[in-house]
Image (cartoon, rainbow, N blue to C red; front, side):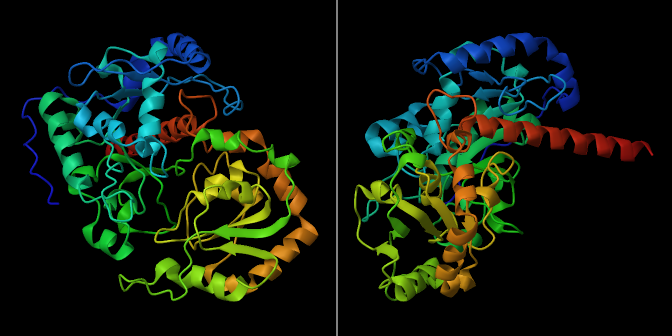
Length: 436
């Protein structure tokens, strides 16, 4: 779908205040923010009823999180996020049409929106006080394809319409060209909006999003067209109850050595003419399909998570994209993730030291996988499991509703705060250079 043309920005706007000045001017909010988020974290509240376009909803984050920033020595102003109240056709109508919208692997766009709105005690009425602006558009809820997976054919048009509306009705996009606006792109290749990498790369990120901040599941080390915008890597969505419906990881009986259930092509060239999983899943099936230590299944099974909970190692090979929900499911169920996806960037590395809780095997080394796993069992499996079973790490990958201290939404806010800090340092550096 072609992006609709956006209206030109307004010509007369108030000058944008500098970030440092904004933070100093609003430091008086500090004590109020501390109290507000404390109330928010311990009280559940339903999202507010619908009201006319663009009602503000500002989330004030705790300025000094007890569990995650204990090393901080000085208090700092909170990140304040203004949530646009867009017409329901951009979000709530999609969620009402199909319950899968709020629960499937791309549902971080819904969960983050709910978590921000679910904290009424921390909501402010002045968008001028916000550091960032959240644009809630659900583009992953069009389950119209023949296989029942979400279609992204409408994504660019729907987002372009939302941006046009925001530009027309409110001044904040135009003053920064969208640089302080946040979108969720929880799809295979982020805001490139296509599940096939070659098509995603050819299409690229829409021009109107390239200056904004993207929260996306896709991330790789090194340059890539689909991450040519400011972004934060987030985990794929897995329903929070997954962590509660099975035995605690340390108490589970693990009688499966290595587990994978999912799509494995006998012939790796897909009907589209592309090689699925870069042939990795096909090689897994060919090499280990008859190996009794490997529990590899191609057919769907609704209770597959019970199999993961019984496994020592859960294989997480790439599919079309490097990431998959198996990564989060493995951590929640205490099964050591074995990531086979070269150059993948993983979410929240400052909290989740992935090298301590998972294994990464190069795509070219699939032939040596059994040897690698046997070596881990003989040496440091118990150390990895102890790190993996830490409740703090499991919580960091779950989008709770309402928001909870330490959960995935909390981690996103920490990442956004760090992003603002980097922006402030770059601005200071530019100012310093201009004065020399």
